[in-house]
Image 1 (cartoon, rainbow, N blue to C red):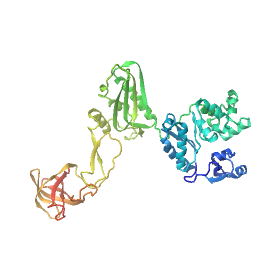
Image 2 (image 1 turned 30 degrees about the horizontal axis):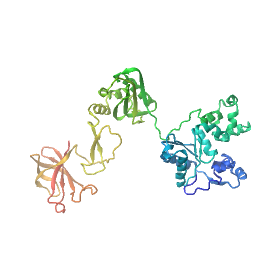
Image 3 (image 1 turned 45 degrees about the vertical axis):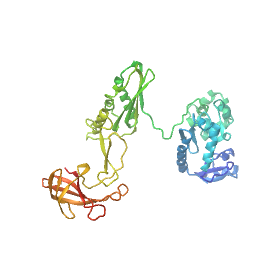
Image 4 (image 1 turned 180 degrees about the horizontal axis):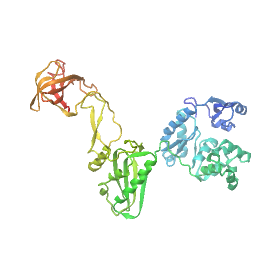
Length: 488
């Protein structure tokens, strides 16, 4: 791949260099340079003698890897699975996706067109295996398409370098007279097995050949694929109640989570009936957990809702909302106190009365008191946006402020006496005011500002009182007074 917007001709040999022990060496080459005999790891001065028209630029390995990682996600437009292949390519699993683009040939044209619009040149190949596609893209014809029955024939003419082997292994095979993949195929397998039996994957031509021919599995793993935690119980004969099997399933699932250092916030129970029907039961937790006894208790009274029909012979339990979970010490002796947890109480109440029966307060980005706090279900995950304030607020804030009748007001202060809930209150002491202006992005232009006071009446009751508006502010008549909350 070349720099965006400055792609040179495909037939121009280009090499990227890095500093070596004895001067600059070849770090990566394009297809034209490879066909001219330019080898990775060789010195620049030696390669210029072989190919005088070689163009050289300095490499940026870290930048290349970061760009390829982004490009691997961008390539998801053609298939659901893609992964970066080293520092010079991508592997895409297009199984079942090519027909959406008109076939494999049309898909390669589409890929080449889209990459060229980004200023990138690419050599593409389609093959049944990862290894075969890698070899054909670098050493095969342009836009090569290889069928399952053509792999051995098309790979036979390629050099042994196409098997993704270490340079030392390639040199050894050439000294043995094995310069092509076809020559390696013709050698009796037992002879090569004796020589490379203890070699690693990158130095073992037989294992690499088996991968290219599809005899040894080499699946494509997504760059962002997360492991799935799932256990199941296959029954010898149909049953009608999964309850006896739930404790063991929870134990096995929590063991897997603990070994991986993970916890979960949801469990999905699935039972497969003998008549082909499937039933589901889901439970959720307020916090990350991997306690099997607690998770098993959440299914109480929920399993009874499953219609067993003629019975079921398979039960699966899968963890959802999986995240990293660390063990916290909350006792001086190094242990954890699991006797009582608020989150477990919330889980049990929510499982019994419903997910919306238990709520928790959340903060919102607003300085207007009734907007600064809301409520969501306790099982709702994720952090809510919020603000913190050092100012004292009432322990109880009314959902709707209650208007009071002022008997006597103090200038620039709270009422000396007012009637609220049919009782007369005389202000003994107060603090304030705290002015809160309207939010212009929420409120109407006629909304009046508020001046809040903390007042204490003759009986010691503390209230949060505010005056709405000012005299002659042009937004209404005389100011009105409201009680918005009570302090402890």
